[in-house]
Length: 214
Image (cartoon, rainbow, N blue to C red):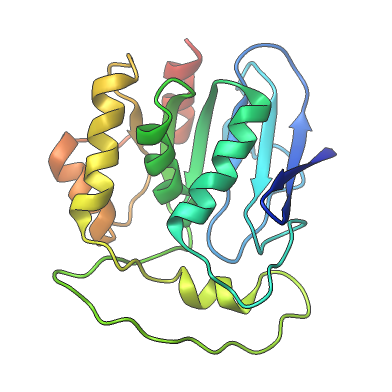
């Protein structure tokens, strides 16, 4: 495994190359509190191109910022920086990584060539109505994951319509018949909203990647 460090504002992001190769890259996005795997997971071994994995801000080998300030948009920008380095890629996201994959697929439909949504630790958002802001106080971080990341990213302050808007953008602008593949069994509210809106049918990561690779 080789690692490239990318600059995102004051953060150094760790982008790991798990396996070299030619063709469209596969980019793995981990769940909340996790980090990139050290090797290509078995369920993704058949991917014909290079395989990369990104450590989000505050996770793995990426920088832990002082005082928190985490949001889904911050992590979406993390992935945007990685895609600027890799070019068009297929994305596999776990939990929080799956949520971020949907946002990026809608914001950068020309760069995300399919997103596989898997189960994993992550946010359980969002509310059914307006919420009040609150202040979080986390203990000092002595290593990843950042406690502020765990607190601030555990739930989403946005309603399901927010992520559905991004999903619809991907459907309209990506040029792919189905830019999302549902490989998750859990149904947090944000994912349930996408399933209902796009009528996604369950599949496996292996089948989904075979389709995108083809």
